Image (tube, rainbow, N blue to C red; front, side, top):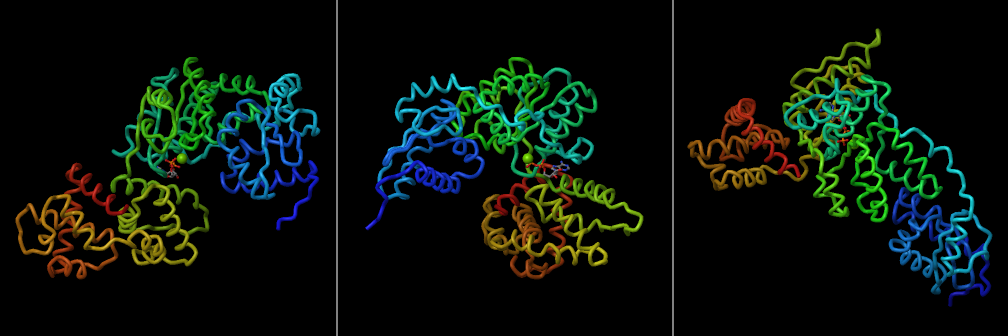
Length: 477
Ligand code: ADP
Ligand code: MG
């Protein structure tokens, strides 16, 4: 049924190619599209064959292994017939069709060498540093047990003239301070010795620059820029872990810089060994310096961070007309208890509460806080029931679930029961009497006592605090 023109012009092929590119862009995302597909153009087209020009041999190999099958599929869907898609290395972006034989890759490479490469657009000559956030300094970084090791390592690098360990590999879940520490290193070095140069880039930006340098034959310049740095920081390397052939080039560059004694700082969401899609030898190279992880926040650290953020917010808003915001300690404690995922969310919640108070012109109270953060808090506890908490805690302390509601008072069951009550209080929105009922019809004062007791023990005994925190995290996930 499908009607199709018998004579296919290059113009039509170009349209089809644009369509295929669009579809593929939707599948692989903008960044990958820009890196790999955008630079491709049609070199020659016949009715059922198209030859695509790829700027470098390296990009061609990558496109052929990763995208060629899908490109053929999409093209076939588009015109209903198999299209023979071939690739040649062809650095000139818009060549006149017909210059190159579709399958003579050899010739094309000779042409590639002879052709004068396009000059790289100005962006490639930017400095190696993405803008740094003014707020991310060592001064504003609150140190606690979960992050002190990473912090100490970052400090050490910021204060040393030669690399004390190389590379420094920082890793943690999102929003726990990796980027903050990297920016802090950069600020500190700049302040201490403005002659030292620091490069900071997200891994994606780094790869983008890298690919562009390859594409525009600007590698010398790119490497020169890298060589001129004293410290190079690459943030979130997990985002490049899937791109096989770029890795190869990336790590040659990486090794060369290490050999030149440049300090390198890398961050990722996983340890080097757990990074997926990265070759073993590269993983071991990444992990051969100092590996420092930032643990999830503790209650104490969250409270400390909130206190410091309150000061920061006050500083930002110190206009003569603005009324002083007062945040009761109870509210900060409440937030530190409830918003446990990461620091970014914690700060976001605090800012929301403050903004709301300003807008409405009312004081901040525990009630107003609960109201403002209603949706956020709700989301957290959607799936969590007291039954589930009792079950998890009983399992953890190897007692029977029945003991959660039994009258037994032996420490071995009473303590886990108190922990379960405490967790029910902080992780659900049940009232004290409701919680009491769930624990064998106990009085709300018993629950209150349990919560106080657990908090007190957590302050006194860090091992116990960690254990309770671990349980909380397990329940939240
Ligand atoms: P990551 O890079 O690990 O995802 P960020 O460094 O972007 O996390 O941190 C997220 C937010 O939390 C930032 O606003 C940062 O300033 C703040 N933050 C994280 N840890 C701390 C800390 N220990 N002290 C103060 N602020 C912190
Ligand atoms: Mg980050």
